[in-house]
Each structure stands twice: as C-alpha cells, then as structure tokens.
Length: 90
Ligand SMILES: [Zn+2]
Image 1 (cartoon, rainbow, N blue to C red):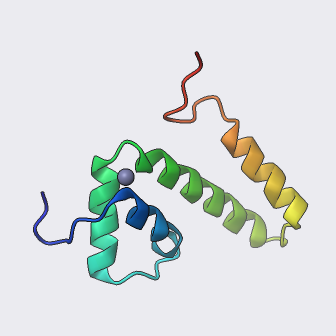
Image 2 (image 1 turned 180 degrees about the horizontal axis):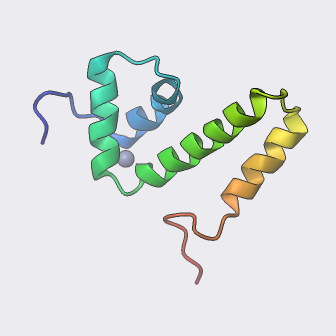
C-alpha cells in the first residue's frame, strides 16, 4: 500500500486516464493513478494503449490534423497489434 495516495479502483483509474495523459490531474490524483497502474495488470495494458495512441496522434498532429477516419484506422491498427499485452489467443 502507498499511504501517500488514496486507493482507487479500476473504474476510477480508467476515468482519470485521459486527464492523466493530458497532465491535467492534481499531484494527489496523479499519484493515485500511477500507484494503481503499477499494481493492476488489468489497467496497465489499457494505459499503454491509450498512451501509445495519444503519442501517435500528437506526432501526426504536429504536421497535420488527422481526419477522424484516419484516427480510427490508427486506433484499430493499435488494437490489432500482436504484442498487445493481456490479449491471449486460444
Ligand atoms: Zn485496475
């Protein structure tokens, strides 16, 4: 346990995910999200996915704003990445 930060559950962690990635959280909440992501095998892949997606969009947006159709294709490509953590083939 990390007494410095309030414990949050998976729903709260995901709710804060976008604000976390945008750097909009207070130190307390950011610390709580980070603490949860370090412990939770369920949320961490989701966090990595969103972070990768946002970084990809930022890189593209610096040169040209991506149309929605392109963003959708990028997102689908990320979802289909074979090394996606937590996804196991039968
Ligand atoms: Zn979680």
